[in-house]
Amino acid sequence: MLRTQRSHPPGRRVRTAVAVGAFGLTLSLAGCGGEDAEAASCAGGDTAGGSGSGSESEEAEVEPVDDAQLVVYSGRNEELVGPLYEQFTDETGVEVSVRYADSATLAGQLLEEGSRTPADVFLSQDAGALGALAKGGCLVELSDEVLDQVPAEYRSDDGNWVGLTGRARVIIYNPDLVSEGELPDSLEDVNDEQWRGQVGIAPGNASFQAMVTAIRVLDGEDAARSFLEGLVDNDAEIYEGNGAILDAVDAGDVAIGLINHYYRFELAAEVGEDNVTAQLHYLQDGGAGSLVNVSGVAQLAQADRAEDAQALIDFLLSESAQTYFAVETYEYPLVEGVPVEDSLPDLDSLEAPEFDLSDLDSLAVTTELIDEVGLS
Image (cartoon, rainbow, N blue to C red; front, top):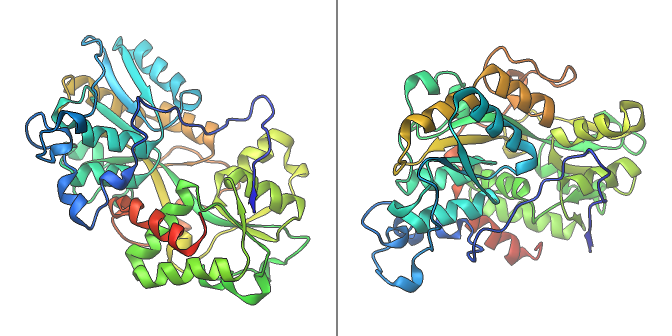
């Protein structure tokens, strides 16, 4: 049964996405690893997605924009990043026109728009969407000066995008129900019999899907299927999102859950540390359960305002913007020297798996797998 997230009181940020146009597109357009990976491309002519079909019915409708403005496709919502775009305009005088939606939808739209896109910059909530666009030839290589501000593991191996913040996968647990010493040491342990009916998951959530994609990348399709089938067999409780899992664990409805780290810090800021029971457990096995995904930014290959696009990327990597992210989202800033929440473990201490985060682009394959095992 699907458990929904609580309503949020004033002041707590709610992660939402605004629909874009009539597309409802997802990264299935990028379906990397199969034929779609070659078809979905920003290269070539005015054909949508570079598919070569030439069919007007398949072309994305490109909305007109003000040529005097820098155009940003933003996979992070207006409530969160809107103030940053305003600050950038105040500091540089560059006006910004922003199109908001979830990152997968925007990546799909950019692939459909191809060379006709009005976008100059893409800001994504996850690395997979950036990887899909990089493989589709939609992005330019960033300068070493930009890339070198961020550790190599949190930027594209090909230099096409750079991370802005780190987002660690964790196990949230209720210490009234389980001691720290009893907690799983790996994702595989989550499916042990002792956790039957006591694990909260959100299969429809992008961060869960990115984690499963990491299993596929690191250990193969069979390992990912086995993990998902184990969750089904072990009666894992399904929730709408990370926040709902946190609530359930905090209330003692389930003992443990799989979420991103910053949700607990947001809850503590909202209700007070003394009023939060749930605690974080960081897996240290170097597997997908230790994934540190990123939000990141890239410049589109067809950017009309390349100089302004570079200026925005530089701004988002500045100390002021990185501090804003750390304070507002409790995510890890990726530029050295920016302070983080005191109780966060050092980013270098996390045993994150080693692979190019661009390889998280095959999200469509993962969602199909989740559907097949019955978790959707």
